Length: 455
Image (tube, rainbow, N blue to C red; front, side):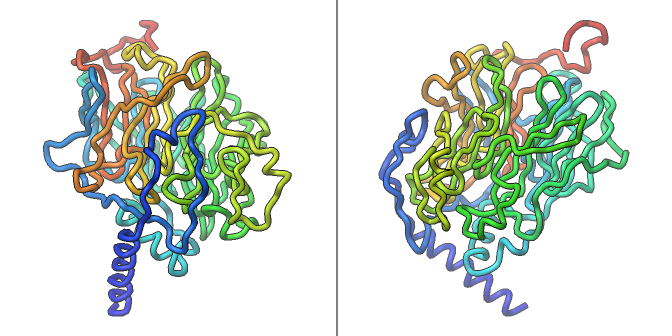
């Protein structure tokens, strides 16, 4: 116990020492947004930039700041590390209360121990609740008044997708399915495994998301890389850094798009109908590289990881090199800022907030590898004719204190039954609801009579 305590003190001192030796960005964060981000020369060093916003939680009476014309309120509070959201057709909101599984191989060595302390200081790497909670607003006041554990005894669950009467849940190691009945507040039936997913004792990027195509015939599953830039060896990356396609009828899976370091949020763009994703790019090339991004996902496409970034910009750290794959690498559609940790993605296709129709809300979890901090907010990217068109707009800010402590960190985003925006905050343990100031109440799906035609 004494040795462990000493190591803990030494480790904390190392983290604080490293944090004091960070190199600041030479460009404003706005330079790393849009279709043509600035990509300066990489900056490599023995000690990477470490700039942590320590997790604090929300002081009483404090909330994030919405954009002009909008208001924010807590939809549900007192949750256990809520990271991902899914809105069922009847208006119920599912929340994955989850965190990383044990992954002992990922915390070996000095670097691994330091990174574990970094994540703990930032509000992650605590024991996972391993469950999905159901939230229901029965009176339309924008606050969940029904709260129940919907599914439990899962394994670091993340993505959810309902197809017909089957609910699919992406655990860290497997895609599972469960029978679902509309209006149910709990599933007690034993789930069945549909597909094994890459995991194991290393399992660097543990989150797995899932989305169904509009026809309900196929599922798309995100699988992040097992490293930052293949430093653990390419043999550890089998089946990773990709979006998989799973055919529900045949039960067969295949790589749909590869070279995506850590894809998370996915959505179908309303105007063009294409699948889009947001991707966390690599670290440790300096505060001004590499931008996270959003991109349309093309069948069979390769997006560069690990050999190159943002198209065909070579990462010389990767051994062995592969010029043929670099030559194939597609440039992403839209940069989302260096080290913003963009995770959530929700396209807007309803009428409550018409100024956002057709565009995308993005939850940015926030940086650790950049000085000054980036992310820690929810942004909106406008679209025109199925493509990003214009500068990003801040929708929800104020997640950092004036002392650079994290009151909260936004992750998953979703659109509720009324058209309001929901934001999962895994440090604040709250789901925020963003809506127009003018909206006081709305007609809850619980109040809509069956056969009314309202869906």
